[in-house]
Amino acid sequence: MKAPAFIESIKRRMQVQKKRLLTIVAAASASAMLVAACGGDSASSGGAAAPEAAVYEGPVGDGEGELNILAWPGYAENGTTSPDVDWVTPFTEATGCKANVKVFGTSDEAVKLMQGGGWDVVSASGDASLRLIYGDNVQPVNMELTPNYADVFEGLKKQQWNSVNGQAYGMPHGRGANLLMYNTEQVSPAPDSWSVVFEGDTPLAGKVSAYDSPIAIADAAVYLMATKPELGITYPYALDKDQFAAAIALLEQQKGVVGEYWNDYLKQMAAFTEGTTLASTTWQVVANALQGEGVKVDAVKPKEGATGWSDTWMIAKDTPNINCAYKWLDWIASPEINAQAAEYFGEAPANSKACALTANKDHCAIFHADQQDYWNDVYYWNTPTTACLDGRTDVECVPYSEWGTAWTALRS
Image (spheres, rainbow, N blue to C red):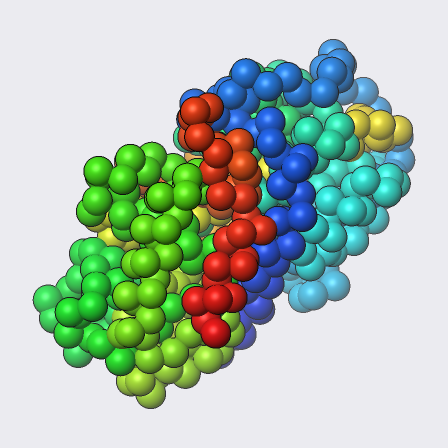
């Protein structure tokens, strides 16, 4: 792909990622549904019982002829966005399942659509998947009926946003981390810590930018986990009142060194291009785009770890198209299709065999797809609730609604 087309492709993908991160705020209204959400063990639900639903025993037979798909933009491409980007049409040709794709813009929208019925599968982010499980909108998935699941990276299987009590509720799609980007010409030595954007004595004061969203509180919590272990933070989305206060205090300190807050990827790109920002939280695809335009930047996952995202394909509880649904989950997780989807969107694929099939042979290296150690300290987005998601039962944690209130106060 020539450079201009490459940049435009990345910009389209960044628009999707921006919209997704911005709309995590909408998940606050679902906190009550998540009170029973998972504990510290990624494969457990903290002792809470999931809605009773039978696991489909199969076998997967002929498709019913139709499949209604709810998807993030870029996840179920049928040639409409670009004629040469299409893995939905081949699915229909291979299975006989006519795929009707509806794109949604927020996790809250996806949940509401699933609650309304009429949809068979949905690509759910971590701030939606547990709402769908505990809302009894999706069914457990028999992964033995999806052969490609065997090749999914182990680090994505039976995690707290896609399983309950060891029972999988969907097929992993892909993942990504939120990184620290810096100007390689003016920032020396190369930073390996979030301290350059959080500490009041940073030499980059005034040329730091920060993401303008309540979810940034989790980024502060990740930094505090490593730098102030006495706070006892073990999961950045499970903060009791004292831990939350410490995170807010850190963000208040950061406010003194921030030159600007951003929630528009083009604004961030312009700031790095013009040199008004030298360090900021970012996504790998943003760094790729800037490098493609000749801007001297690099992006790293700091030593303290980072937040990130992981998405799951889930099946509606009462779908009449169960065979087509299982065929889709296996199709989207197949090496060739997962490679196409992950590369188009700009994330690490879920299927380990996809890495050999990306058009850019360095794609999986760039996104650390097969480096499990890299992901051990990436904390995928989740929705904070009063029931602490780290498994504690002796205290209440601060729910996301209060995260939003605190962020508004911080930014006022």
